[in-house]
Length: 172
Image (cartoon, rainbow, N blue to C red; front, side, top):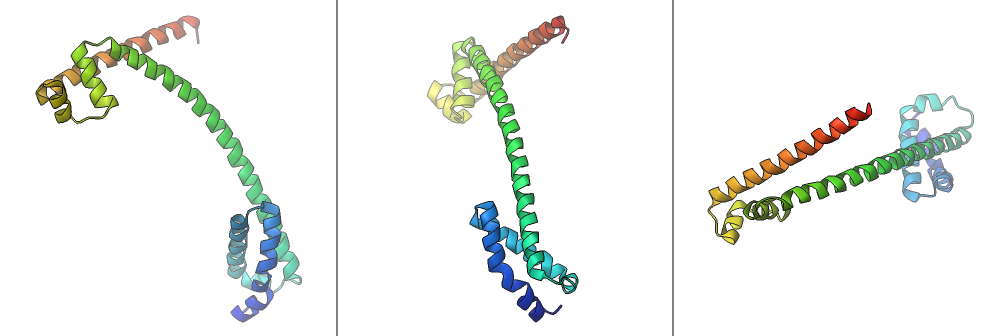
């Protein structure tokens, strides 16, 4: 099939294919994507198209099948998104719980360490800025930050160890 022959038999159907796809998908952009994808497939298989008796029927059936595939794929994506949303809600609950735990651990720190870790990790100030605010040398800020993080880490590890013992005690 020549390019001219392709234009006369297949490409002239693009507007009709578009309208048909738009009725299925209810989206102009998606319908346009379907038609363009099919036109590319048809062009790649132009020699096989020349033996098809009713090209219009074949083209419309192809549009229908492609639209159904896309709708099915969309349903699968929605199902996956629903599962992901459920997981993310559980994750968010766990994260919020952990955040509360960490903030509790920070509140138990000595005052200097509490201020340094808050300014650095929560407010995201630079070491030099924290030093100026608290009238401390940069090295002292770093040491207090390191000690504060270490104490929070130890508290988290103790919490996890306790939870693991509780879980093992239940035989889970």
